Image (cartoon, rainbow, N blue to C red; front, side, top):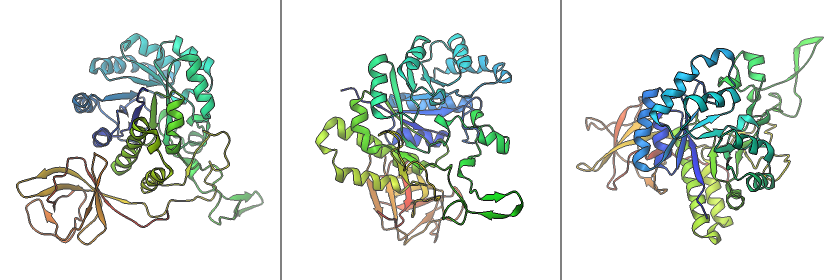
Length: 410
């Protein structure tokens, strides 16, 4: 049985390296132009080249999103941008706009095309149409159930990519107009202000200063607010349905999120392919507990089993006790048995810390001493991106993640 590709988001170079180190087969990125995450950091052409240089020796791929809904004024700069991506030999383009697809076939004809979920592909005729236009792969709309996914694969033969984890848009496959209407920031140009996450209350026009809750939550209603997608328990069914790639949302999430989610889904895919009987309820519980540590909202299975009442987070639920991203390992200095860590949150000795390693293992830390880069002992790592040294006899690979464990409900 072919192994599905695991595709992780990378909002910048550090997240790219983290994703590929923790088990992703590919990453998808956005350039400074024409992608749907305007505030993700994104990549210059030079940074894309650096990402490719990191990925190539690992035999992994870097796919570039050019998935805006283009307006006329976007088109003038598009040909030269596509030509530069072709010259860099990125591993593919993600496109949602037919005009951009036409330009890509003219100016970057050697690059494989993936049709974005923004194109709202929900049936096999549409999938076949895109195949005839030259697309290699389609990211199906999130609104499909598993039988529909299998049917599209069987009737078209085109490569199928499915979102399995991350935030979901309240609008159909992300084509939201609320953000532009309310804030002037267009979701379809990558600048979504996430108005679906706002707290809303009811106002009667003759009483403009009185605000009434729509439901029991006195802070307002969350009727537009969706839970986060999590399909870890459906990986076996999706593999059997012929899905070619599993995709994770989150170009704006932290390296801790990227590392945690990548290693869980890598483990899940490999476990099922190596020994189906090992995909047990106990193993699922372990994976779910790990995924909850980085979650911001409760999980939903979305539409994978059909319509669900558990898609909306109507009371603004939050996930309690998320683990804290404290730092990332840059180097292990074997001559002094210390790991060099770049700080991302204030931490110090005596805290409940652990390291997540790219091979999927964890190392519990009994941190009693902490040193600055000049080997002077300090009580805490207080300064943003401060380089500090952690005494560790075990060699720790680069890109390992330091996190502070928090208590949370199982």
